[in-house]
Image (cartoon, rainbow, N blue to C red):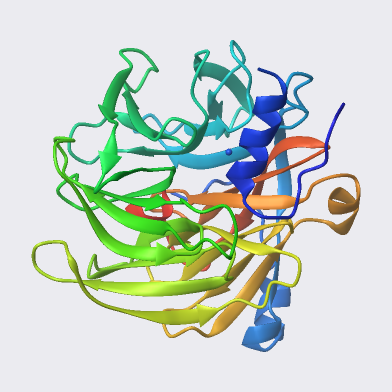
Length: 345
């Protein structure tokens, strides 16, 4: 029986539940709505996203499809994961966004992959396996799979959701432990680039989800899905937390805070689970814009916008959108150019 994407409590928990039933330079083809945006006050700006292509359909085995983790490789292709893909179906998908074609990059019979990002240290593609508390790495062509990290971190296994790399290749992971807003067991975890040492930087969080460095690598933005808030963690010279505060409270209604990306101007792109849209804030918390897909597409069965990648050095942004209608890529004109912080996670 097919199930609609649930609004609560967690994007990836919905995916896990579905799987359990069966045994998470500017592209010249892009368009934005810059005229409308310029004519409106900041809080009222709307950026219209347009459909690029459908990548997946709802899987009979899991009753869902859920795209996540868009990230550009050096060859210019976009890599996307399907959280709910069953064994043998594409779990990592490569997309030529200009030709609008896709290919299978990787699949297995085990992992539930919720994010993807290339390491600046070794150039490999890193995936978070939410179900098994592991991080896997692949060669850029999808071969040579290796378990980069597994096991407990300070006495508890992770449910790794998103990744942010620092400039040296160390990983900062949103550990989404905790099943509801009443169980604040989520964490932010730092793993050295060798995969040998893991340290908890922040604990007692409410379903940690999105995570991204700011534009200057001075600190981390991270979201808590069941509290609809974004916090800022300032880092010291050793990559550890120096101070933390709640930075933005998101009025999402039935929608919840999912993944985060940051552009060259330091603007935050906050994805929404339960609404096919993104909210854009500046670093001071001012709401700059809302990215929306056409209302007819939302009404036809697209329910969540989970993540975004902005073309490195360009302003074309590619947003992953999913629901009973399938898994899609939508494009829009970002407010500033793409950098590493807006390329996967």
